[in-house]
Length: 578
Image 1 (tube, rainbow, N blue to C red):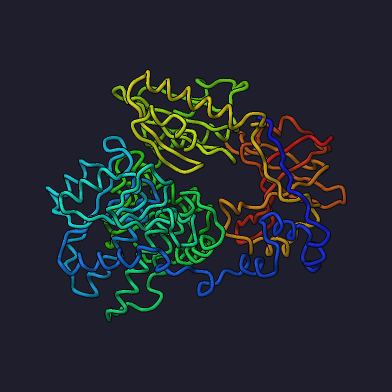
Image 2: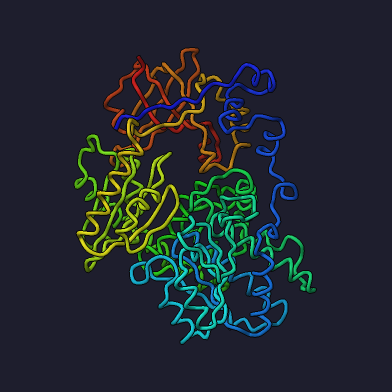
């Protein structure tokens, strides 16, 4: 599908004079990220832990959460960590479980009293339920539930827990429901009146802040836990921040930067095994490795089997058992890839040509709830509009939505709230369930009407965000080294994309077993030669000829092979030059 190139507004003359020593292409990146002062530039390019991290005590109910946790530990109450079934919920559950384990070992508390619960995606659905609280009361004798990445929308379950004598600490980051669970201790950056400054923490990030609060209190009580002990949890925060698509700006950028340092030397036996089987290389792990190697395997457990398998990998301390568990997660990921690819093909056939629709919906019997979100994301990439994918089982419709920039998929659901059994999510991703074909049809009608209003007059062509137009001669090793200072890349700080116009094709051929990919050599109008690689651009080996002039959008990277390193440009989009 044709893509629209959205080239960033050029820097102003006054801004260029303010940073006259900086390369124009790099200066444009600074400008595009909204940085306007030397102080803002320094904060962005040089994250500093002691300067940029926010104290956990800034959460208004942190002291209450810490006090209640220590009370439960001292009384020997059963503490159940209730997570979610995605990578954010699993990693956050591991953060709390590891921290409670450390407290038990430091003070001699009973470690067997620390338990976990992660719902089954198909049977239990998202979040806490009344049935779960009744189960924890009857079978676990739980006295305190600590949620991770869920809970804020589960007032009935929390109130039922209180009736049964179970207190709840909520660590969550999802959008506010109509009614808050006031009886719980809420550690959540978006609660009205909350004083914590970072409103974009993932669920694991919130759990990390509680862990920091608990460890600070432990040290005050004389525990032999060194300053900085909590930083060893940052590998899990780094994974969750990327997989939950949180903006890598402000404190999140700091957490991700230091988290990647920890990830590359992680002490977690199971996580190390998982990284090795995924083909990751310690010392080079970055946000790409999280997004395409580590995260999918952690998520695969909840999508294909049960997310508790992923939690076990993260908590396992025995080398042999960790290897077996990691291998099982890898097998689940292979099965996930095959199943989601098949679903995507079915969804494409069902949607067909988009026409003037502002959103697309694909629905089928038997599509598993664990895969609908993945397929929705692929449809967004294909069609450039919001997409909802829904599976039907026993008359119940369970769906997930993914969005485009500027459209809130959860607000879209809110416009049809009366038709859903339950729903929730973020502006970019959401989930819902509804019983009955008629109610589902009415929900889709209301959602379509909302999308028509919200996206009226807007072009929905897939968009390539371009940071700057540059000549290939600007792409040097010094330029690449400067680009690395902008890492880690992700939501809110995507990897820079540049455009070079009128480059001549000097070498071209398809690569890969099926010819899907492209290897391209080009020469700029000023005579600079460069190598490009385009994954999924194999058709250009048939469309273009030697000497043709192209406009190329690309990312700058490094190709390493046989001990050699060379600059390589990864194609994002190609056009015939005018």
